[in-house]
Image 1 (tube, helix red, strand yellow):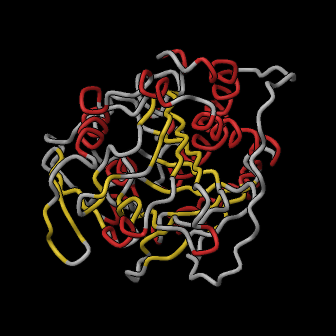
Image 2 (cartoon, one colour; image 1 turned 135 degrees about the vertical axis):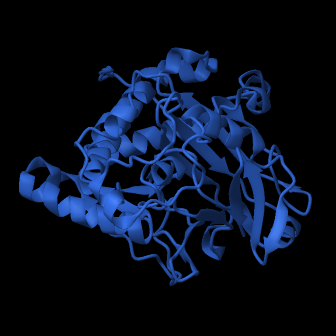
Length: 365
């Protein structure tokens, strides 16, 4: 495991954001206490709780994940500095080549995606592979790479793998059935993403119906979002209503992605979520996100784990035949290259579609 020197490089500290005063319609999400996984009784309780959350909303909170509030603040300070302390010229030098590589490594600059009606995005990203040595990084960021490496390892081993073991147990599979498909040292694209949403003009908000990122499902297995206080994230609830995700200090907000839905034969659902303009009291503030995306190893074929007794009892919902199933690499590169660049087909009110590897991929707004 990566170790971090106690003498940390100094960084500007992000000012605290006051609690939201407006009353919002929040999603009712389960809170998974990972400390309970230390005992057989606690694990059994978590399996039931997690299974229910995954089959209902597909979003849930995690607490007692092993990071302190101080460590949480530190990774957000690094994320903020990745955008604030690096010049536009240097960002362009470290820009990822998404259309060619199908990977988000490096910067994604603003105005790359089309949101709607000719309006481009106002989102900056910097993506660091779980093995940061895979590519070079801006000079400013290099002293912080040991901390980013440690953050990725913690997210993978202390959050993602424990959850995958619980989910495998819920499917009545060997405990490591899912974790062994998500190897930290394997060939794949699990990575941390720093993501900065910048405020837009009123005209841009009107043309996009206040949508900053259309409703979508994530590519990978689990997305680990470190909760932050600026509003904007919403989940499409089972009753068809968009509901806000509430901020909880030092909690994680986790959702299932396409990969988990494919591997579980539809038993666990990939979660539809979006980002919209923050509420009025926060609209002058940039929205910063820190996310760890856990993806299966590139060679894994995304066919259902049909040996699961649970799937055998409940039936398997396939999005493609086993013969036509893409690998993780096929799926992630196909989605990444297409997202925000292809012409979408309007199929119903609030829904647009595209085809990726013969699978209908929906976008909601």
